[in-house]
Length: 572
Image (cartoon, rainbow, N blue to C red; front, side, top):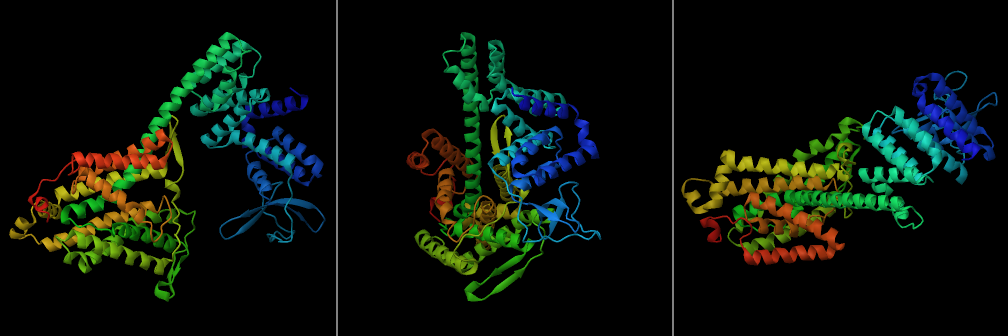
């Protein structure tokens, strides 16, 4: 180890052992002044001065170092000719200028804030300086409040496999409160020890990485396993570690595929659930179901705009403007817009379904081919209405912060939006089941579904039941559109992407059968993901799924669960 590296490492170690320094104003002041000196120094000395910041690191340096890389650090010359470096912080509606040396706002002698001068040029960076900033920033991350940030910083140090990082990692281990981060530190120490000339230490490191099934260490272990100059004990330990890691990767991939399949199946379920009810009750092949679903997506987009700056659009060439509340996108109120959009999406799609049933479908009962053609025509009309109202391009809908990002369970990566759609679909299924089995409307729907003629003879208003049921199924499609807006943009023809899959789910599960729809949606989604992962070809995977469904329907034409009713047997 060079003298410079030794001094650098020793400084970091002393700092990490003395974590109380973080809490003192003197530590922050010293660190800030050192950074200001580095910014004002000649270009040839800046990289070395940034590296020396490791002797007095402080979390407060992070924003300034990152801002320096993004060309947000400038130098102001006051009335006395003193050069003061400052950080330009751009917020939603304001710009703040903060002095680097003390973190306070940049003011003149009278104490008034100084406005930013657009003619100022940012303090430039160059490759060597950027590497020094990156290295120092990585070390600052070891003291971050977030365990995940510290964990990533520790892993980066370990992957460097530099002996100079050992004192840093060992010092961090003494002060780390989070157990998961501690485990990562042990793995990183083992990673570094893989380069040790001591065979016993290397074997111990391989055993550690094998027990923890450290996937990031696989490449380093593979190099050792293929190196014939290693001792027999080292080679054996490397083979055992690789076997353990490969086994862990297999199970992570397997459960990850299942999770993605269930989430895809949940999307299909939400899309198909409303269609299962209307198709099962009335036997109407509604080709406009996808467009009704997109009504919910556009309703979500409108609610998002209303929570923000508003929406300007021109239906049929008539300029219109919906004013917005002007909430800050980062505020909790704005982030809750999606919860408000859900009932609005349901009601909007239900209203669209109600109008479609009253204007077209009620005249076409017991005429499936005519209803297919009519609703297909209605879908084309609705697509054109979308284009005239919102334009031909897709509209972006921002996801709330609480359903963005991901988390890991034993190495299986789970996205919050996928978890949300699974829970979302489950709640819809439970709610729909309760509606059909525990409410008077559900009783009427089941009566009409089982025998329309007998239900009419008993005084059931079948026309009203048809209308309400179609509106309810359309509302469920609107909820599907609201969620789909969170995983992709909404456009006039987006609904056509899902209509075939929705009918496939309904027919395979059994027309009008709720449980069958759930099983077929989850089964199709999971099988699709398994085949795509296994064959490494999504097209072939989807083709095999379709072929499998066709063969299954040849064996059971009525689907997984057939609905026994005189009405269906008669084709009504």
